[in-house]
Amino acid sequence: MSIDLDKYLLENVGQLSWHSLATEINSLYKTSYNGESLRGYYRRTLQNTQQGGAVAQKRKEKPSDMVGEDRRVKLLSESKKITDTKYKALLSEVERLEKEVESVAKIGHTSEHVIKPKLGANLGEGTVVVVASDWHVEELVDPEMVSGKNQYSIAIARQRADEFFQAALRLTQIVGRDVEVNTMILALLGDFISGDIHDELLENTEMTPVEATIEAKNMLASGIRFLLDNSKLKFVIPCHSGNHARTTKDRRHATEAGHSLEYLMYQMLAEHFRGEKRITWIIPKGYHSFVDVYGVRLRLHHGHNISYSGGVGGPTVSINKAIAQWNKTRVADIDIFGHLHQRFDGGNFIMNGSMIGFNAYAVSIKASFEPPSQQFFLIDKKRGKTCVWPIKFK
Image (cartoon, rainbow, N blue to C red; front, side, top):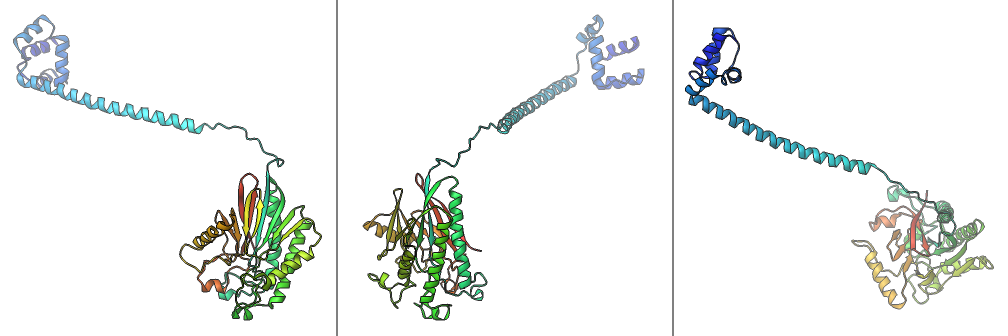
């Protein structure tokens, strides 16, 4: 900068605002200062000189310039506060993200330990229970009467009977991979035939009750022989009559077995397998039979003494009421029965499905659809009832 400009600047500092002074100097000396840059130049080069100091003592800045400077300082201070606030917020967010990254890194790290496989030996002992009931072998189910959901005939009954025994053996072999199974309880719980207890059944069956009983006996005999020939199992076979195989119009209570074609069928089956040391037959005249398995007491029956005729919530209330009453006479851990054509594990009871499946009667009482099925479950020596599986049909 020229000496003349410095002199001009010294002479006019305090007389004009820095902005006006910069405009004047730019016009006179062809420079390009603004108010701030000119003021900075003055402070760096002239204010501390003897002449400049004297001028500064004599000529103070105008009040308007002082107010402007204060405003500028205040704005800078406020801007710094805002910046500090933003910085703190960003610093907090960075710390939060760092913690998240650390957590993700910990989750992403997988620590494995070696699980040793257990061999089949010494894994425990169990007994399988296979439930057969409500086959109604001679009854017809016309698909047109059940919206195409089912079909049944003697031929289909024979096929399903074969599938039942095949599945019983296959499921036993599956659980036998890890649990030693030496015994099967094959529960034959009645209503293998439909009989003629209702007039409608006279029109909707393929055989007479006696013929149907012979057919059912042959199916069961063939299945038992299949199990004997294809396993080393021992068999306990509890046998109960249903309500359909009776020879009387009305039910008998004290003499029910004496009027049941199924009771006769069971006696004939036991005679057929007489001498077979692997089979233990249980053919009671009364309504119940009992089997103890590792301290678990099973109570078996057909189920027709449970009073249930439909209603909200299903049959469980009626079932538990009946069980509570029976337990007053002799306590059982698990009741096993059929009759209601509904497969269900109630904890303290196992209810069997039916092999005939959905039929016109089920439609008439507005029963929920259920495909044909039977029950299979395991009683583990240490764990009790486990592995409740359905036996289903093609």
